Image 1 (cartoon, helix red, strand yellow):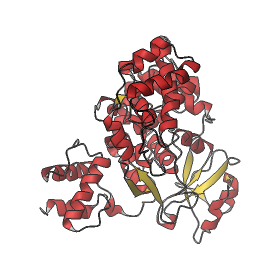
Image 2 (spheres, rainbow, N blue to C red):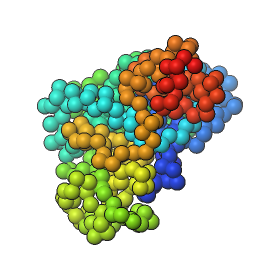
Image 3 (cartoon, rainbow, N blue to C red):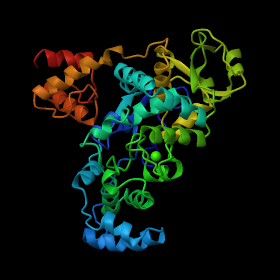
Length: 430
Ligand code: CA
């Protein structure tokens, strides 16, 4: 979801960065499971040391004219903020941002896990009629919509996690009250959130989201909600928290309004000719022009629309798969401005449709663990008292922190990275 703060740095442009790494931040500890947070790429947050107002109630009073000018009624304002107290957890999460650097293929491995593919395929079947209707109304491939649902909230699973989900008004008011680099974001989003309440889309108690205000199945921040959320079932409320139809239609609407090309895919895995000049990756050219340079579709099929403009993306260079990315890839990046994210959504959507893994493997196969091995890692860390989060195989910031603690105690480089070697050491009793 497009939190302005969650903007990808230019780490992996066409042809890949120097090492194919993405910078990874975990401002929301266990929400890293939502797998959008692993690629939050904010400049390191510098929390303000000074609070702008002396007390929360003084701050609430001082913010009222701003809310009033935005059309918020006194009744809405008082009901939402009358008893405001800052949320210490939000303050902690906003200040405890550790930065990780993760290679794109390791990110993809966890983002497009077998578990997520299987869960998504089951949901495609269960919601077949709904998804067909959304697809025909918005012209957005249902597999892409479901892939984003999986990436943003693990198909709504995170919404049941009280460690992740918090009252949105309180979170945003805390960011606004706190001052510092997130205050402007907090104020803007708080006004948008108050408007949602005033409109009656959701009650204050059900308006929940991440500590940074990403809400519901689609993880919309309030301003995105204001611009793109839709009331798909026509009950008068745009309920992205409790109504899957409203949520997925909102996602489809957002993609459509961002320029989604109906009937087209996001890009293609391609094969590059021997001796390919990776310097060519810098420029966009048509698929037919790429074809003339010897770039072919993996599997040998022809490009369906050869006049389409595409850029080449080979984040691991010659050591991994390469892609030609077309318009819809850019559209997916409206959701989260990161190549890694968009590639994960695209690949997950293909897998949900029954497509296979990439034909070329990524490097670092030893760093990839299966879901059951990841569960083992978490269990073994928990046995050592280093980890107290869910044993679910989802490696978020809590798991990474535990891995780093363990690595330090056994003299490994504390990079928080899972690997076969790490699992072996844990299993050996060290
Ligand atoms: Ca509705």
